[in-house]
Length: 133
Image (tube, rainbow, N blue to C red; front, side, top):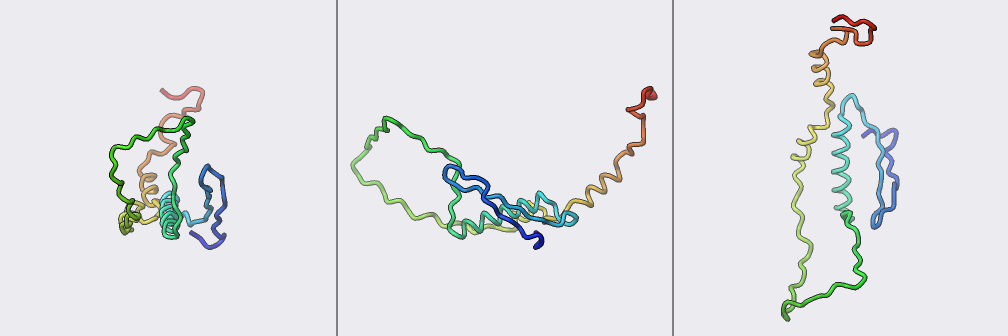
């Protein structure tokens, strides 16, 4: 991500229980693949938010039961106390980086495919009134 112009984060929408953010950034497209850069940024932003104590709620909706929900007790023994949040496993960054392909642009692959492609001047002119048969 380039330093200039500076990246920008704006509040995009207020959802039921979240504030949706939109990120804007510039990158060097001659050296990096935009899809891979976007993937890496999403992964890094998610990790930073979770490290900062922000929860990432799902998009579940609240369900209201106007007549309530009957609760039937199966036994009289007390239920166990909920345990603390399970420890998070360390994230293997190598797997994410390998999946993103190192963020490199695929320009060399595209140029190789273009070199092998048929020339548009070969064959019949499809726009001519009487194309050759």
